[in-house]
Length: 304
Length: 258
Image (cartoon, rainbow over all chains, first blue to last red; front, side, top):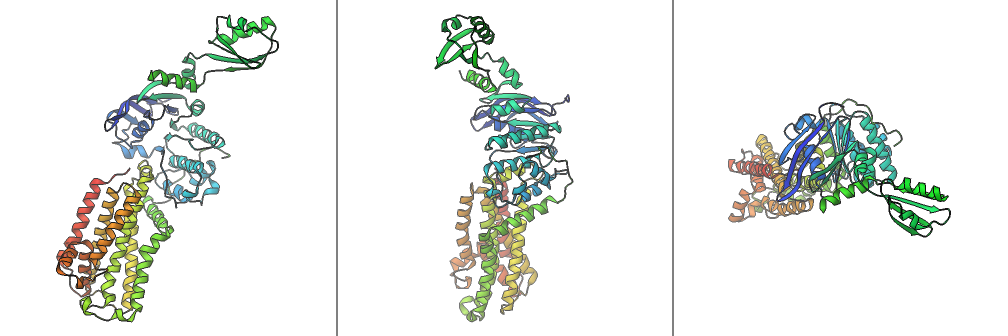
């Protein structure tokens, strides 16, 4: 990792009239990192990346991209920055190939746009007009346009919104391959699975502030969320035995299935008890807290 | 998406501004309505005027000119009016609404180049169509402009004035729909004072004074004078330049990219 961060945001502040969109956001992104920005709707995610892209001027704080101010040193930043925006269309009569050829002419050393089309699975649509593309195809074209200039930094806002699960998975693979080429990526998302899969670190933003910043694993681990253990006992077992365990908080039954909720060590205690009783746990499932739970816990905690 | 690997860098092949202009030109040609209204209609009109025999003879109600000669400058200005005041604002506000200008803002090519490309293709369109109109009109016996340099200057000032008005509409109209509405609302009075419905020679003094100060009324004055072989009146040229400068400056102040 380079010692100088590729993106540095310090105490960013942005207002629209009386409304504060971003109150106080700081983070830095290292070279080659995929950095995620998570947050509920209206949390200030898009405003933050728009300021980083240089599309909006911050009201306070300092932003540096590749060591430059994205608003003042516009020309220096845009050549190495690829941006995929929400709600950004192309003229409906413009064909896919024409759009890519046009945008590739904007950069000194662009990616080969025909290859990029194939990579994004848009090869057959080269002659299709933008207005005739499906939502997913438009989204993939938008990603292609963000990558056409061979950027060192890519900012992707709601990357996979509107894509079907297969296309989403393919896009994730593409983003990983982009990162493997050394491109630093700032990713705005509200899909926890996407953040968990792709991001090295995530910042959770709520009401214009960073409320958590860590790796997805640490965010989840930090969370004192209960384990939920489900199983079907091979022979009937007394609920009292389970609920007497100090690690267990509650025991409920749904038909023949038993649901045990408890702390971090509940699984070991339940397993030992069942072994002592000679009961086999069929269809055993343990639900671990996910980034989803961590996200909800973090943002709900903020509201209370 | 079989191989999810980003392709290697290539070398830039095209010059961005010219490719932008070419692409915008293609998009113009793909919108049949625009081509029909800006390019075909005035050419058809001048052919029809030329074919009808009565229009070739001088008439007193047309100030001693033939109806064909009266309508040629009006039709020539119509092309610029249509392109700059009706097409351009609709296209550009549509681009702003759909985030096309914003998207360009994130690339090394600023969206102002797109405005330049648009202006260029509409100017080019106006010049080409006007040349065709002039050739057809001359073939039907209309006088060709005797003071040619003055004629070209007047036409370029008409182009600049209409472009200024169009850019101002683009700057103030929040959506494509409003741009269309304003463009249409501007079209009729501008054409009226150019003498499309009542020739300037038949206007009373109040109407003709208003016409003198309207962009296309001044345009007709300048074009007619240079057709007659005089240098266009300075007042008419100043009115045209005034519209170009005032509207252009206001547009530059008020313009929003998103």
